Image 1 (cartoon, rainbow, N blue to C red):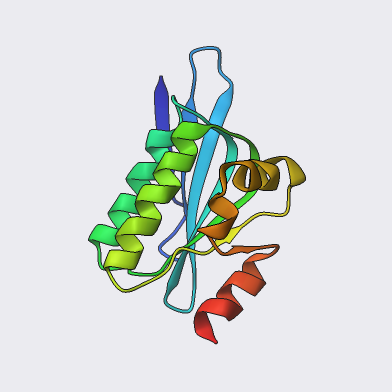
Image 2: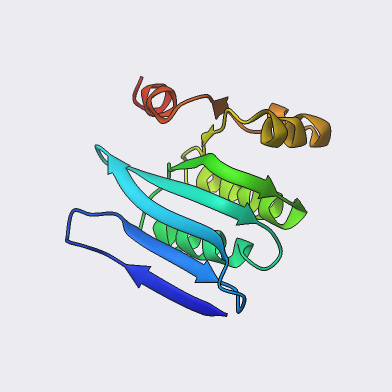
Length: 138
C-alpha cells in the first residue's frame, strides 16, 4: 500500500491519499479550518483497510489540542463498521476533551447506516459543512 501526503502551501489543506496496489484510491483525508475549528473532509471508501488514515488524522488533531472538530463525510461512498468505530472513538475523545464531533453527511446510503445502528442518536449529523460550523459557533 502506498501513502502520499500533498500540501501545496501553508494555508492549503493537507491531503492524504492511501492507494492500493491496484492503483485505486480508497480514501482521501483533507484537513481545513473554519475559524479555529478543524474540518476533516473524507472521500472514498472507509473500510478496514482505509479507516486507519482517518483515525490517524483525527487522533493527530485531538492530540494537538482540538477538542471540537467536524468530520465531513460528503464524499464517502462506503462506510463499514471499522469506519463507524473510528468515528465513535473520535466522538468519545472530543467529548472527554470538552468538545463535540459533528458530522456532515447528506448521502442516504450513509445516513441509513447511522439510523440502522442507532448512531444517528449519538452523533449530530448536518447536511452541509456550513450548518455544522454554525452549530459549533452558535
